[in-house]
Length: 179
Image (cartoon, rainbow, N blue to C red; front, side, top):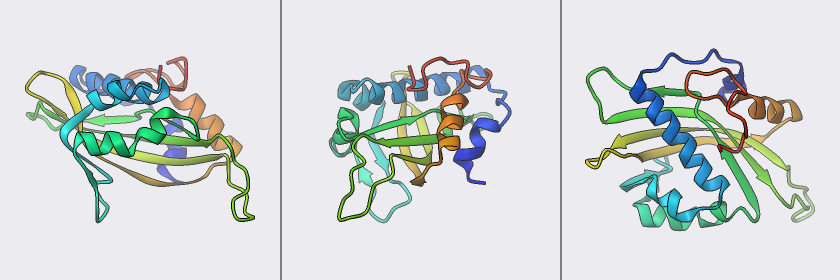
């Protein structure tokens, strides 16, 4: 099964305090999109970040990423939600972390385009590398994801139930929008 589907069924990870700090920062990043806060979104990006890191033409730099994501952040056509299910740091490396989890896109107006109806929900996954900058703040350095595919109602329900606090039980974090 795809990572995004299994994420809600996985056992909660055992994380260090610093990994939990990255987990909370990831939730804060998702909340910036849920709250349509472009300034907060940009504050989560490293100055020289790259999004779509595995693609032939990644988006490079905080300003370019924020500009490209403006339509997602405003939430008028599509709502994007995500949350971490894993955060990992290597022993002895205190300024770099990896996070991953499911993502859910909701098309707000799934009207037919060119005769073909659009699916309302699409599920995917993300993978991010975080860097703790000199000011002590964790910011996304690299981000990429799994191409979203149409989601079944069961997958949407599993996504909504799967969000957890750092090391907590799924569904314990309240609002599935990241707040």
